[in-house]
Amino acid sequence: MPSFNILGLAGSFSLPSRTRRLVEEAVDRTVARYGGHSRVIDLSQLGSDIAGARHIEDLTGSARDMIDLIVEADALVVASPVYKGSYPGLFKHLFDLIEPTALAEKPVLLAATGGGDKHALVIEHHLRPLFAFFEAQTLATGVYAAERDFTDGQITSPGLIARLDRAVAQFEPYLQQDSRSLPFAARIDRWRGTLDAIAAIA
Image 1: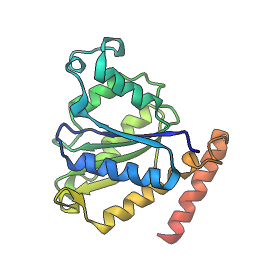
Image 2: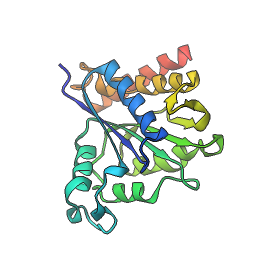
Image 3: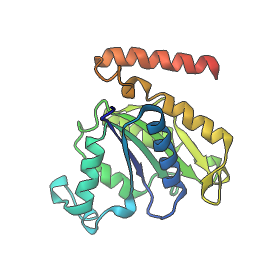
């Protein structure tokens, strides 16, 4: 049986939120495809000591637990709402407290939510550079969801669902059971083959 853990992080303070719903959908589809265990967390669960923390050692309670979950996960789904053209400051501060090597080679599906299309490049301009610093393996397809993609808090856009499935398929080199024992270079070759297959049917 699969033993890996999929963690979803929604960089939102609101409950409910479109960002959390997007993360939940991506995580559910990942587990349905590859198995494993999952959990979704968000910024509303951070404790009060996060704001004044300058080092990870300054954290206790829920904030430290959240960082431990992020670091220990086998794969991440990370989404942020867009505030004034970027992710929230506390979202960035959370990652500022993580060791630079802690996320190396970890596969990450990046997503974001915003009111309209003008914020769609936040994934490429803000989230992807952040995870590149950590040397994480961000999936090629980022998933941006606008307000019109939801109805009563639920995802109703066929285009968004298709993009989610496209992104989730790119976890294959990392989460397939016969892939997890492969050397990193071999996983990259398989990942490229997956992308070629996806492109052929897109």
